[in-house]
Image (cartoon, rainbow, N blue to C red; front, side, top):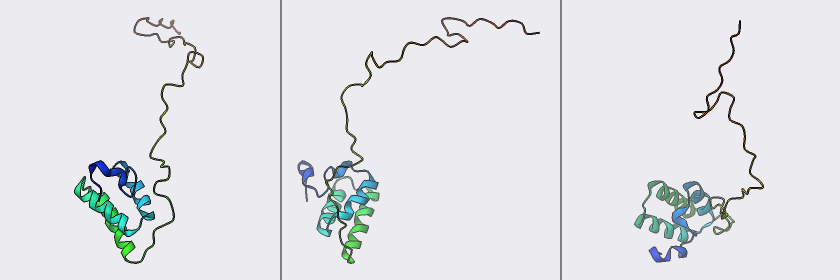
Amino acid sequence: MADDTGRSALPLPDYDQLPLGSLESRVRSLPAEAVEELLAHERTHADRPPATEVLTARLRQLQSGARPAPGDPSAPRPERRETHAGSPVTPATSPQPSSPPPHGTPDQRGKPKGDRT
């Protein structure tokens, strides 16, 4: 079992940051020993009931004869968004200033409409 300094040694990279839906799909590609390792880690760290339920259910499936699904648990994950530094907006791509709305602004009162008879 991995300790706090060895989290990268867990069968699923960044296990502690995975949302429950991703955990459910990612454990399907792991053998029983790896699921047992994650379950032990979960119980000694966060001990989140939904995560332990997912891991326990998958472990039971594997012990009942299920086979790990094909796939790479360390493949790129949709839950990890690429971050780009800085804003893509520049003065060249900024919109032109617009006029205030016709009803006025707090600084500039609108003009009353004329009498409609």
